[in-house]
Amino acid sequence: MVAGGFWFIYRNRQPGIQNQPKILTAAVSKTADENPDSDRDGLKDWEERLWGTNPNNPDTDGDGAPDGQEIKLGRNPLKPPPDSLDATQSAKKRLPDESNAEEKKSTLSADIARNFFSDYVSLKNQGLDDNQIQEELYNSLISRLEKEQKSSGPAPTGSFSAKDAKLSSNSKENIKNYANALGAIIKSGFKKNSLNEMLLLKDILTEASENGDYEGLSIFKDYQKAYLDSAAKMRALAVPPDYAAYHADIAGSFNNFAAINAVFSNFGADPFKGILAINDYQQEVKRSSAALSGLIIKFLVDGIEFKTGEDGYIFVEIDKQLNQTSAL
Image 1 (tube, one colour):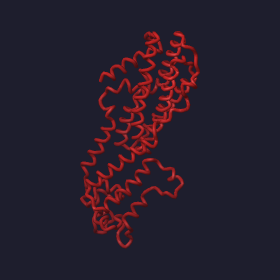
Image 2 (image 1 turned 180 degrees about the vertical axis):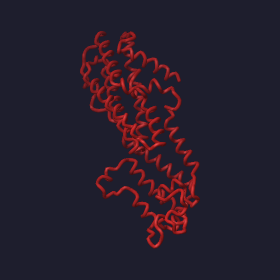
Image 3 (image 1 turned 120 degrees about the vertical axis):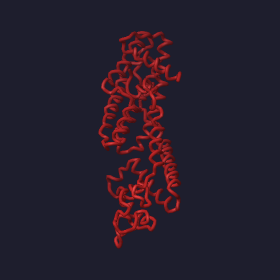
Image 4 (image 1 turned 135 degrees about the vertical axis):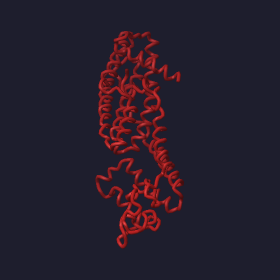
């Protein structure tokens, strides 16, 4: 079996992994479609959370006016007259304080939350109905994430390239030794952490949505370390010249998977950046699969064979899975 991100090659035939973003989107859409107003005060439950009002109390401040009516009148639904402030200013006070040095270290999710509120107030003041507001907010969110994806670009691959590789020779013996050494690095780095990250992320986030505990995400720090340690060993490995380009791509993928897992470990604090990292992960799987495929074909061309029990036999297993995946 192969490690971490490469494990995706083994597991991507299981239902749900490739459709993970669709599953998340479907869950969000279902919640939006239900769109409850539990206390029937004119504010949907999700709007109550935005304003800080009680979704189970139609008159949070007890002044005799429903929360929804107070918002329409521009009054603060959290304070009765004469202390009622402008509703927008009151809600803005619940956002992170920009003057605070710690708050200036903003996450992508915090930035989106601020923009979300501003967009919401603007749309509300335009008199749009709930469905129109939700549609506009959804489109705005998708647009922001797409722009962020383009601006951030692919995950960094580090400075290692084919020209930086420590070269040996293209003798059949050196190629075989190289293959076994590389196989050993891939296998040994992930003895404790061999499950696919997407499966782990799905399970951890599902559980966290029920109990609010995101401590399980710390496992991705272990994956990050495993990738970084393995990449370092790859950089020190003697590589046959004809294999240097493939080797650099694989080492680069390990660096990328390390960066992606670092984001996964912080998913609870910055979920929108985590969503972008899911896309990065899927793109990196394609990139690493291409590098592995090229490496394996080169082994075959050079007549390199592996027996069961050899560390290089991992490439035989990978080849089988790549072929099964391409046939789907």
